[in-house]
Structures are given as C-alpha cells and as structure tokens.
Length: 175
Image (cartoon, one colour):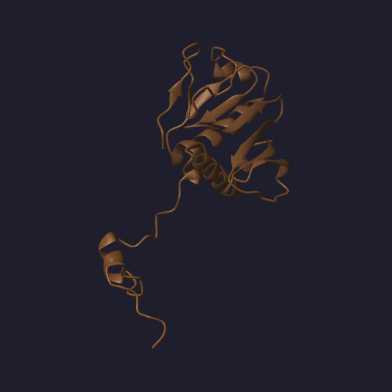
C-alpha cells in the first residue's frame, strides 16, 4: 500500500496522488449541529464512538458534510434539525430496509444512504456496517489475500519430470 499524499494548498491527505477535491479550510464540527436537536448530536456521537472502537479516524468538518476518513473517506454525515442523514461506503451491496438508496460506483465501492433519527438506531447491526466501512476507508478490501504459491524449495522438488531435456538427442519415432 502506498503512502498518503498531501495537497500543498489545503493540507488534506489522500490515498491517491492528485485526488480531485475542493480546497477549503475545514470548519468547526459544532457549526454543523447549531440548528439540530440534541438527539442528532447524540446520534453522531454514538456513531463516532463505534468507529473509534474500530481504530483511529479523522473527522473532517467540511463545508456541507462531516466526513470520516482513514486512508479515504468511508462515511459522511449531514445533520438536519431532527435526524442525521449520511452514507457509508461498503465493499458489497447490502439490501436492508434501513438504507434509503444504494449506489454502486465500482464492484468494491457501494454507497449506502441512510437516515438516523436517534442514538438507539446505532445498534449492533449498524455498528457492524460501520466497521466494514472503516475497513474500506483503510482500503483493506483492496488487499489481495495471501498467496497460495508453493515455496521455492517445494517447487524444485515437485517440478515435473516429463519436461523435455534438450541436452539429449530426441528418440527416433520409427523403430
């Protein structure tokens, strides 16, 4: 896995060099919740606690959304007055009535749109999806499984004996 690159203008880090983005200073997280009910902030805090239980995460308070990023953004949230809109990037499609819309961007990046109306909706099922999305953000879903290739010492022992030996003259087909 390659290192992160940093935009020289805004200082954001990205997994891809020359990642397209809008250079803008990150805002204040509390500004996103200024017009929301306390339950919306409590819902976001419950989500963030679940994600932080999986691993370290950057919380990016952008102009129009709050993004969660490891190597790449894997979740985004848009607080409203009485609920929390958001989406998760998952490596597969999950058909659940809890998702309002599902958009497939590539075979391993499927965006699942949801709406949470209270912290009680951040249950074990949703926490599992957050953990899966976190692994997408860490780009673990792109890593190849360990190779099943035989070690070299076994390959030399196993090498088929039927290979043609070019040092000996070929036998005549006619006897």
